[in-house]
Length: 362
Image 1: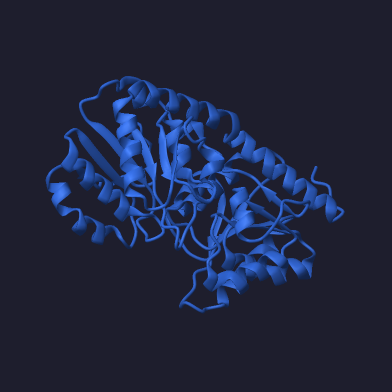
Image 2 (image 1 turned 180 degrees about the vertical axis):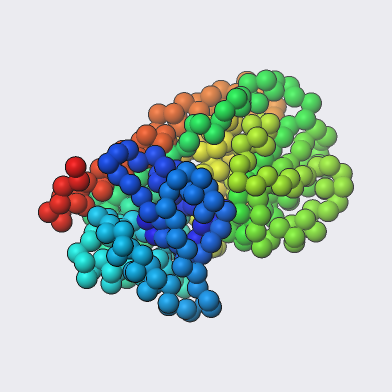
C-alpha cells in the first residue's frame, strides 16, 4: 500500500484497519510520502512501514525511494491511497507488470485544480476503487469491471465498553451536539458555530462539542471565544480516538462546504452511527449512501442555518424519535459498514486483479 500521508485522517484510519485485517495469506507493506501518527499505529500492529519524505513541494526523489523499497518487497499488487503516491508508482507497476489499484477517490468532490492529474492517474491504473458511489460519479466514472465501490468499515473493537448515550438521555437537561473532523475550510465549522449561537439565544440547555485539529482551529477558537466562555462550545483535545467523546453526545452532526468539498464514506458518520446517535448532515456526496433521511437522521441542504437548527430542535424535543433513529443507524452500520464487509470487498478486488494478470494468490 502506498499513500501520500500517515497523518490523522480518515484515509489513514481505513488504510491501517485494512492492513491489519486482511486474512492470510495476504501480507502488507506500507510506503508513505509523509510521516504522521499512523506510522506508529501501523508499527504497533506489526506492519512494515517506510517513509520516503519530500524535501520540498515539487521534490520527485521520494518516487525513486519507493521504487527501490518496492523492488525489495516484490509486491503482487500495489494499492494506492493518494494521488501523488499513485503517480509515483505508475512507472514501477507498468515496467514490472504489477497491477495497480487506484484507491484515491475518497470524497464526492473533484477538485478542479487537480482534475487533469487525477484523471490521468485513474486512466493509467489497472482498476479504480472508491469508498462511495458519489465519488465515482464526481469523477465521471460508472461502476464496471474496472471501477468499484468498497465502503469504509467500522472497527467495532474500538467501542470497548462504550454504550450509546442516546439510550439514557430521555429529556436530558443538556443536549450535547458533537461534530468531528479536520478543522479545514472543507468542513463547514463556521455553520456549526453559527448553529450554536442561534440556539443559545433561543433556549438554554445546549452544548456543542467541536472535535478535531487543522489549520482553521485557532481561527475557530477566536470566533467562538464568547461561546467557549459561556460553556456553550467546547474544543477538547482527543488524539486519534474520538469515541469517548462521541458516546457522551446525543446528536452527531457533519456539515460540509459544497463549494470545495463533498464527503465520500464519512468515518465521522460511521462513528456517530456506531454510538447510536441520530445524524444531522449535509445532503451531498456520499452522505445519502450512509444516512437514510428521516430514519437514521436528517439530510439537509448545504449551509441552511434554518434547516440545521430545526433538525436539532426536533431531535431535542422528541427524544423517543431520536433514540429510534440512533438504533436504526447502528443496525444499518452493523449490516453494511463492517470491517468484514470492507475486507471481503478488497479481497475480491485483489483476486480479480491477479486473475486478470494471469496470477493466482494461494
